[in-house]
Every structure is written in structure tokens, then in C-alpha cells.
Image (cartoon, rainbow, N blue to C red; front, side, top):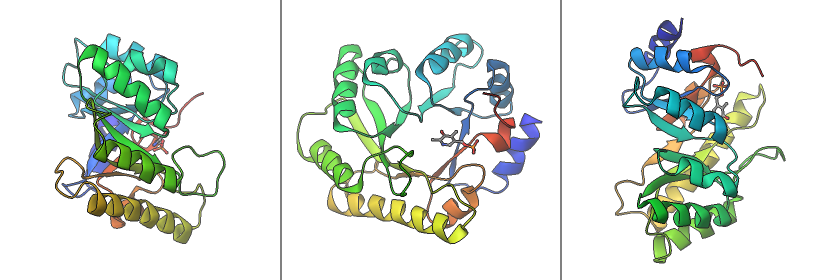
Length: 225
Ligand SMILES: *Cc1c(COP(=O)(O)O)cnc(C)c1O
């Protein structure tokens, strides 16, 4: 099923749009199955789970790329920094500072996305827009973050059936990206990611400019918590 689900989704994705298979709560065997079908980027939202799976799969899936997409506590940054491909859910300057510190220790440069909070929902995470701009300005204009590379923005739309609302949220996320690109990262080729769109809304996200979708349920089935 996983293989079929993957190819069905891929057939809906323009070639330029990346796919992160969100494997949280699914066992390592499922990730291996997706890997064998050609999938390389996997998204996890809990540090312990990602570390455990990375250890289990290191030998069998050597080209796997780990995307961290969840709430990241500062005291756990050190566990993922040695192997993570990208932290998509950076949502505070304190977290940035900790990533810089831990990345320096292991002498890696860590790719990140700045997570934008654009909905009215309290439960959603991410920077408020002003804070996000300030964080981006600090990274782009000071020498304080030599081990961090900002590759773009990540965001989620409101959880609703209202397509208009969802589209407005995606447009908002894209506008934040464009403003940053224009003002701070114009000559930076690596600043080119807009990570938005999940199982239920990824087609809308692509219409509004997503460069990378994060899909779990439509690949692996429902999560059992
Ligand atoms: C779980 C999760 C997804 C995937 O959600 P699905 O609806 O299962 O596709 C995408 N992004 C984030 C940040 C998530 O936590």
C-alpha cells in the first residue's frame, strides 16, 4: 500500500515540488518500505522517536534525510543536530541560539526553515510574523549564526473545511517568504523553500506556491496514537 500511495501522490506533484513523507507514529518497517520505493526525505515531530528510527535505519537506509517538523525543546536540540538534514520548525530566537551552539560543537552547518504562525489558532506553533522577520534579519545581517543556513519558511493552514480560508493562509505564508527573499536573501540561492501542504490540503498549497509538501496519512494511513 505504501508504495502505491507514494506513486499516487507523486503523480499529483509537479517535478519541482519536494515530498517529505511524514512518518511520525509509524514503525521503522513502514519507513523502510517507503525508502525502498524511492522515498528519501522523512518528517518526524518527536526527538526521541526520530533518534530511535535514525539508529534503526542507519545501515539499511543510508541515504535517508531526516526533517524535523515538530515542537523542538531546546534541551533536545543536541540529540538531532549530529544527523538531521533540516529543522523545518524553528519558532523562536532562543531555539536558533541553541541550534547554533550545538551545531558549532559538532562542526556542522544546519539547514533550517522559519515556521510562520499565520492562523488564529492558539494551538498552532511558529513565529508571529514580526518575530519571524526579526529572526531572519538577525541571521542575515549579523555574524552570530555561522552554523545556520535559512532555506525558507514553513507553515500550516487553519484546520478547516473552508478552502478559501486555507488558501488565504497559504498565500500569507508565501508572501512572508517573498518579503524575506526580496529584503534579505535576494542573492542567496539556498533560500528557496516554502514548505506547506499536508495530506488534506497539499493541492491547494501547490497552487499557492509550495515547493515542498509534508504528507503523512495519505502515504502511511491513519496514525494510532
Ligand atoms: C503530522 C504533520 C504533517 C502530516 O500530516 P498529514 O495530515 O498526516 O499528512 C505535516 N506537517 C506537520 C508539521 C505535521 O506535524
